[in-house]
Length: 287
Image (cartoon, rainbow, N blue to C red; front, side, top):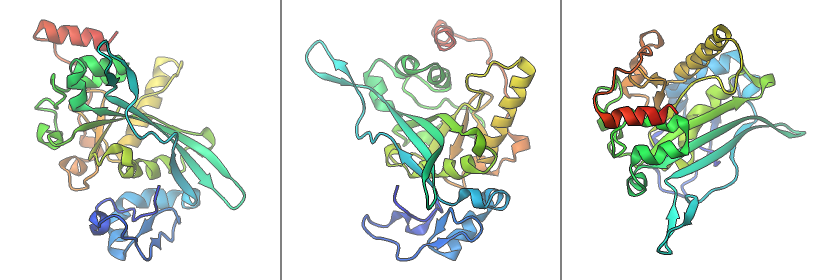
């Protein structure tokens, strides 16, 4: 990834390609983030200060690396008429690496799914298409209509927020090496995902904060899950209506950013389905 100002709302971010920043200021606390001006550093301080103050040294030398480099959507198969069929899904795997003078080590991994919404409509319909990709995407799709547009009355998230978005971005996994947990790596990495070229300038990222592959008893599992949810909320994610899913906006001025964590929407079970089609989709998403 190219070195650039870490203020997502940097006025220079819209500069034409090839215009390089002559000088980048480095955060004196952690040496992990860069700014093109004191104004950008001040604008980012509210979001950055927790990780910087708690674990300053741990953020130095971090980088995100996409592996492998994927330029296009995966080829599914050749159709009966000989035409190539492309998947509406692209999977992006990243490594969080820490570089020192002696070595580079892997300290975490991230997996993202990028869904081309118009392509799902050509591949059989939004829900039917994404439900085949994963159980999580099928459940997320219940919050969208048949054409992949967010349903109304989704709390702080409104259909107009996503009206111009061609791509749905879903953060499937964020795994930090146990020895590096609690050092601010996840807080450092999440905002940088918006800079990935493979996200095509998407302004929103969805996630289902939960425990991965855990066999703990219910009480212990719930404690772990709630801790993970709290981490995502501290990173700016807010619940999508009353579902298991959360979303974060790149724009720091989005209405979701003004909601205190304590006032975020609670989880509630869905009301009974009102149509046979809705009932069938819920059954498919949960099985």
